[in-house]
Image (cartoon, rainbow, N blue to C red; front, top):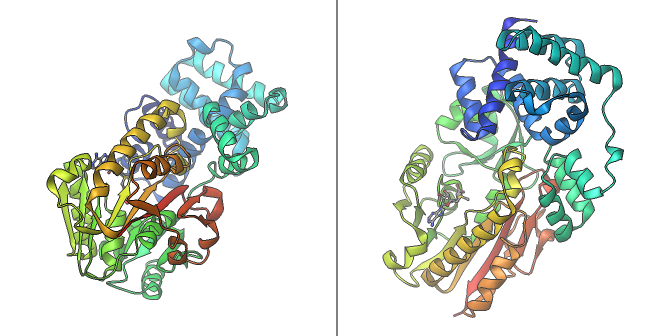
Length: 449
Ligand SMILES: C[S@@+](CC[C@H](N)C(=O)[O-])C[C@H]1O[C@@H](n2cnc3c(N)ncnc32)[C@H](O)[C@@H]1O
């Protein structure tokens, strides 16, 4: 047991404290801890596993801890985090022996607190070791049980069961507990998929082709965001589901495209690449600092056919000419329920009312960008969420009020083969368990001529 290891556990404890106090997003806090402490690859792996694993399983861990903590109201929050992290190692990680995990927890408790706290931590963990975990069989309501077992808020499990049925919800909750894939989109204006894989292989990464998207790759070993190939603009880190939006939009060379909610530019850059550097993609975003990210990505990728603007797209009609765009993409702000694997802290911060507030914003955005589509042009609406209110219902409300648009069922033919069976009547809902990619929704509409 090295001091370094101890620091990693303490760092995880501090990270969880900061995340819970809502100081920042888990991924940003994790990256800054890794950079600040110049952690090795092994320590980075352990820190990520402990932080994300504990966050992912928080509700189940608390259920297991509850009967063993006598005075939970008086337990300081860092002590609670320490107990969660240690129990996570004991229950879910085979490679760390229980006695090692408990020993290190007690050492941290001594250092951070005092002998009394160390004794309490030791007592709780040893009692769990002796008596075993409380059984989830005591929770008779299946929704409540699934909620605790997979650490998803009960309101969400209930909502998903109502919308998609129990089995689909269970699969979704279970896959959300696993680590996400790292996938990337090869920049075909600079290289080919084969050459990009060779370049990354030479740098020591282990890469395979995506089984679903022709221009996508998956990293099996190593974070390719830190590769030379990335800096050379040979690819963009992007989830495979997000790549499907450009298939739905199907921009042709020399067209004029609007991406109304574009930052950090994942989809704008894909569209610009697919147009082979011709035409123009107008990429708007509400926030100036986010628009800078689009510019940085476009310049790293060598894409000159993107024009960025800071704009509230709810007022796009005041600044941009009516019926002047061949295709418009609205990749709307959403509740993000499809990406909870990447951002597990969301499970404890999202509220059901957020969904209804967002659906109003989505409606407003659709209303304001739709006049910009040319007659016969395409309007793609997408979200990274799994919820009918923000997806099908938002689109059907829009269609009720905009008889000039129809659902475009030819989207199916434009999708990669593996995706086609999931497209129905111009709608595509991808669940995270379908391909291991993010939960995502795409609707394709066409303006009548
Ligand atoms: C889902 S993200 C877009 C992701 C982006 N399409 C990509 O692929 O990289 C939604 C974006 O909408 C922006 N946004 C939210 N409200 C907006 C508004 N009223 N006008 C323009 N952009 C907005 C947010 O700043 C955020 O960057």
